[in-house]
Length: 606
Image (cartoon, rainbow, N blue to C red; front, side, top):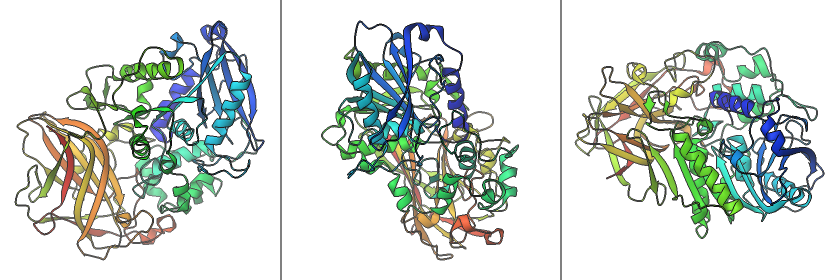
């Protein structure tokens, strides 16, 4: 769980499940012990272990490793629930919760997204794979009545720790479910998206998460308890340049914040923290879970699944993906039947919870069966589940939608003409949502975009009314030809379902940002040549959505998305070092003629 409103949702869930008050049913069924388990380098990690009192059979071990505390602390304190979801009380496992290195009651120094070390040369070479391995070794040897099989799971940051158990995995690990896992924080998870910094989310999260510590502690204080935000748009605009957040509040006491801003390109820092290249020779079964409205780590789910598929061609039959209409961790809710303007017609969280239950029972207990397809996907718009033999579906036909003059979107190639332009002003950035709030609102992932299309610094393209349903699956690729009067600019592309209601609601389906200087490389940024037509490609995250007959399809393009994304000065420079005087207006043009045919490519299901 990382960032803002998604963080709040999961914190609420965690507090309910791990309340300090004892659950009498769990206490009567399980014995709790707490241990400090030594890792190979001598650092000890705090571990809470819940063992079934029934010793008539042997049980598998199910582990969640977390930086967010495995409270309640104390062997007399029991949580409100054990296991990944509400179905697990009907089964008995040895449930294990562990504070990861450097967090809460564990010893050691915390590292953001601990870099993986594939070839360890000594006991000093430790990562999350080795810490997981050492913890499992201790558990197998010291916890009675275990059956020798281990599973791991976790949502968001705990999802990363689940993923990080896979390289050089302990042979006892048979099943792992990374859910909304943080995976690549520069390209698409949490910190940066395609090189653009997620200012609001990261400042809020780091203030909550990253206070300096001298040693183990049960509770985390904020970095600066004086932070008070009533209106995020107003707060971050008045702050001014990004560096002022540290000057006003953190004063270099936020270690992770300093690291994020010191590494504003995809350099060695981020490359070392990208777990994807290490996901090779994977033996355990994997179940990747994510949400179509996950504002934090949709990228992580989709790309962790893809990395395992591509790098383990002989063992990918045990790698599965589930994508539903959820926000960050929303599948943990008892019911999930609607979100923002969407209604789903069923309790979608129940589908995942049953699948997760069957997954662990099958691989850890040999009970029942787990015959889920490679990809189990909920298609929004038409509101139904579909199972595919691969993701993206091989039957999806690559189809282009063409931008045209007079705000037209051509769903079949025609005679595209013209060019559109707008003035992007960092002093008057476009809000990410048309609501005031004290923190990020998850609903921006599905919110009505009419407020944006009415602005002069947004261009839009709209199709004719659809004569039949159109279903798209997989990633959306924007292939644009652009120019700017400056040397850098952000480009936000939105794909929208225009509903045939009285308001002609412009319901967001998918959106993504690219910081323009990274258009050719995330490692080596390049300035724009002012007013020169330049190709720009932006991959939006996958989707599965049906635009129904009678609806229209709209594409919007803009260059600010505030305060979700930090303001680009619109000049080629190190943005974390920018001063107020560096921010400037610029004229941006989107070309869509025969020579420069801007389009979006989608995968269309027939």
